[in-house]
Amino acid sequence: MIGGTGNDYLEGGAGSDTYVIGRGHGQDVIYNRDTGSNKTDVLKFVDGISAAEVSLQRKSDDLYFNIAGTNDWVRIDYFFEKDGNSGHAVDEVHFDDGTVWTRQQLLDMALQGGSGNDILKAYATGSTLNGGAGNDKLYGGAGNDTLIGGTGNDYLEGGAGSDTYVIGRGHGQDIIYNRDTGSNKTDVLKFVDGIKASEVSLQRKSDDLYFNIAGTNDWVRIDYFFDKDGNSGHAVDEVHFDDGTVWTRQQLLDMALQGGSGNDILKAYATGSTLNGGAGNDKLYGGAGNDTLIGGTGNDYLEGGAGSDTYVIGRGHGQDVIYNRDTGSNKTDVLKFVDGIKASEVSLQRKSDDLYFNIAGTNDWVRIDYFFNNDGNGGYAVDEVHFDDGTVWLSQDIVNAINHDIPLPTAESFAATPSMPLLKQMASQFMLMDDNDDSGDNAAEGMSQLTLPQNNASSWAPASHY
Image (cartoon, rainbow, N blue to C red; front, side, top):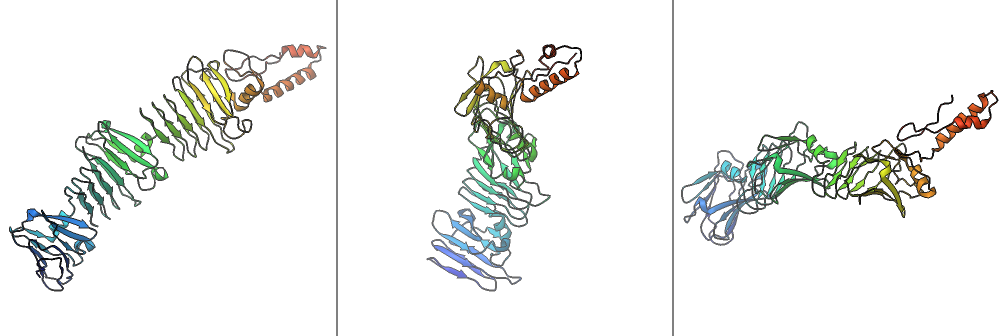
């Protein structure tokens, strides 16, 4: 069949058919449907058209042959149906320079992109896709596929099977959508071209995980990596580097809880996590578990969430804001001062319903938002404040100190007001002393023997009765 000039439709039917395409023949469509055995269907280029002048392009299940320097093309409809085994594919392509491409060669060539924005799809048995230059889209199938985006900003989707995503230097900003819930599968992100583990930093944004390559604007993003705390099937199982380093999925989950020198956003997992913002102005979010939040240096925002959470503040940690909202019962939220910070170095200040802890000799402070909501019973107050000298302040003690000017305990002084349980214990002890004393001594004598020595740095206890 020779369509000639113009945009033609060619349908071969049964038998061994030949479709002839020459220069200036326009944009022709071939519908080849031949399921018979021992048949050879051929696409034949004439008028001096050589293999070097023709490039391939897959669109959906159709195959395009684009002729260089023109707007002419040939499209074979449904060529890729059933991975090229449905009878719609031609068996050979002949060129005027004597080159012959077989059907298998066409299937292989369709996995290799060019300089444009290509769309490549793997076959069910497993394929290696290479996008080359351009902003490409690569789709794996049911098999074990290797996806190489190449230069440009590419989209890589592995599909089922054990898939490998290959990233090299200068590959741009690539997005990986890895969705594989099957068992006994290992999906791998592989860095090549000498990229070492020391050149790559991690960054979490929402549920996505970024791999930033030092000294460049290049990155790789794995979409939904943290969905269901990394257990949804979107996370890769391993990351391989060209220096031999391997990071496992669990290592990635652990590393994502540690901030760097920038302004990080860290999120805890449902089972409970320790978040460390490091330097920078960070935002740390606890989850449903018992979390520890360490803002580090910089002015940080710490939100504990549910569970018994601990907020850790050290020297030079800046001006940090704590949003503690936990209405659950049997939970203990703690503000913990470390790096030698003593109770005597910290003064309290109420502003509206917020509570400030000001650290002496610095401009550093910690603010607990809405601490005094509902007189400290709104669920925003921490339950305890721990200092590095062993002193502990309870939330009610703080409310009393602010509202009633009752001194708080420090390790250096005895200026502490006993708590209500301690007062009850003291009263009980005094009554026992009075009831059992038959020596004729009066109550004042017993009272004079009741003292309040400091038992340890954070609590007070009555003296023994001699």
